[in-house]
Image 1 (cartoon, one colour):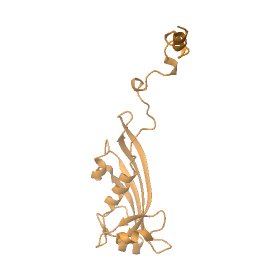
Image 2 (spheres, helix red, strand yellow):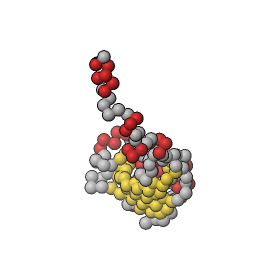
Image 3 (tube, helix red, strand yellow):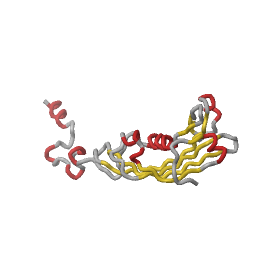
Image 4 (cartoon, helix red, strand yellow):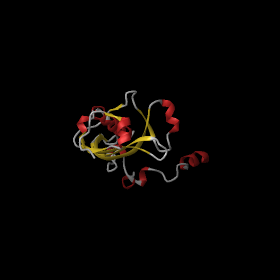
Length: 173
């Protein structure tokens, strides 16, 4: 296991050697991800494992745990969303090889020279894990948006019991 993450690796050599990397990266190193976050404090814990499955398919297992600070679209307040990513990426040289990947294996197109930027792979997986509309599960709408609750209903004398009572009176005339 390696604690430091190299900037780039030769994907096919990593598969042959069945290399693994684990460590911690500051969230601030992910520039594209930082553009959609409310804050870049904290760190991402990652584990990357290269290998081949029983069918001979080259893969990269990606596991990341990170607290992401997002803006709740219900309250417009920042909140921390604990995010866990676990995915298996099938390493392919061309798009034609995508159909040969086993189920549950997402394709990862590797450049012709075999170079793979591991931090970019982690960042891509985190971007894919972001919710489409971030909502803090502990939030609730402000009272001025929700309106009066059931206990704050209008008094009964201000509303008629039967909405058709007016029509009945008109019919009698």
